[in-house]
Image 1 (cartoon, rainbow, N blue to C red):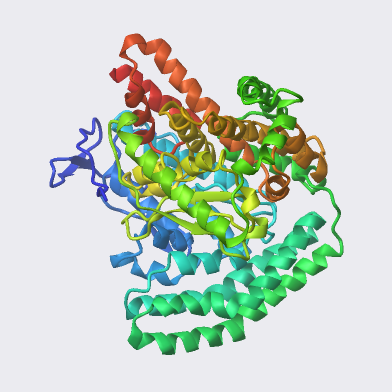
Image 2 (spheres, one colour; image 1 turned 180 degrees about the horizontal axis):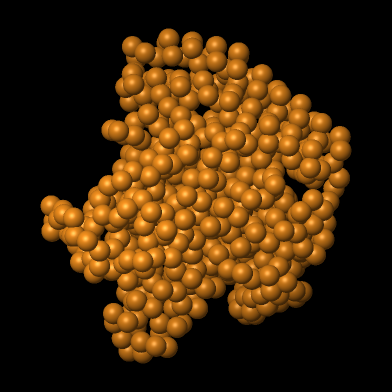
Length: 631
């Protein structure tokens, strides 16, 4: 891990108060100057942040920009301590975070929003000319992420992802909620190396009911406003909640089998008591609320049917794409890009003997070809896992051909928890911890092997692992802490689609053109998402219309799109980030080629983008501009 150290910066104005150990001059500002947004000076010594009961207070100190950014990061982690554990930074002075959970109550969410507003007030109007380019990017990223999140908190209902990807109008539903997130987190991310860790584990288990009760309070408030999820989502959520109640004794106790022997038995007994006395009753209260909502639910799939839904959806699109594109503009872009991609698929289909019908119809026929299916049941699941490992090994060996700077991510492939599989996509992935103690993971949905084909699983692997999410996350983990925390859906998913493109350009399908069909169908699938997401939430499509668009226009598998469309209903706008982000990265590459001419370098561009870090698309534009100017 590269430490986040202050860069050598010559501050241009302000009263010099001292010099740091590396020769950096610093200045001191009064509280009045700091709260005024630092508009009167380019000196970048900022007031530090410290959490105090969920609300920040200003500490008067001389501080360098990177140090201030670290303060901002830890202020955020006070509100989302689980992220500190996932990053491996809940150590030393911040070790107490390891035993805490996010306050899910309305009051806790209001405190979180207040923290974000305070931070934005400090940097609004800041003259960034004295910052290094990397520091400028970091300040721009914080400002953009926090402003988007503040707008989300101003909505009267829903769950806001601060610098993350899962904004949801329904606080608990088939793929959202502590009831799903916490068992997976405790099993895969919570350390249990020593007795102190065991204590922190039990602290968190003892707080799960408070998190569940906080969500319940928000559910009840949303229902009082008339916000009722679609009946088909509630049916899935109720089934998943019942499964979680049944498995709770195992979910919260079994991870303790990894605890040190001397503390294990007592800790497991304590956890069982907590589950019985606190967690299960809290889950049952949430289940009762979901059933109450189910009695009032309709089948309307989109946000257009919810109170204030169109406004909520416009914000969700903005947050997900980091653009101001309207639903109609995104819908039309999806249709146009779908046609372009199908025009590339058509000649390959003809070449392998599929020359009758639309591209979608021919891809449906291809999906029934037994040559490209995995075996059923556990033998097929083992086959899938071996296939993924082989693709990760191959693409890892190609990375020196695509980047000037390399990382070595430790990628672990794991099956999704059984309770999560019915409402989950085919796979998802993410970076490991900042300290390397938790590996990057690709989670694969294996509820049925029919979800996957041999011609599309390679592409999915490149997306979720290398050079996709796991690769990008390893670079982000080498940035200052706040940059490792804040991620933007359009960049994260746009980069992962660009990673699919890189795999093709590196020769992944040169000897397997049916695999290239899978890659192109994957891009077309993301173009369909632009159409279906906006169709559901803006054009009043039904759930079935959304499903059939995928199946008929793109030849997608029925099993796959059933949960996909339901996911769009519970995460409005999220699905639009993928293709919008990918198209923008490709457009930036074309701009670099035009402006640089012979100086353009494939590896140089890829390296510049990934070193720039996860950022909004307008900040990505600035990163590419700097790359062009340097060349």
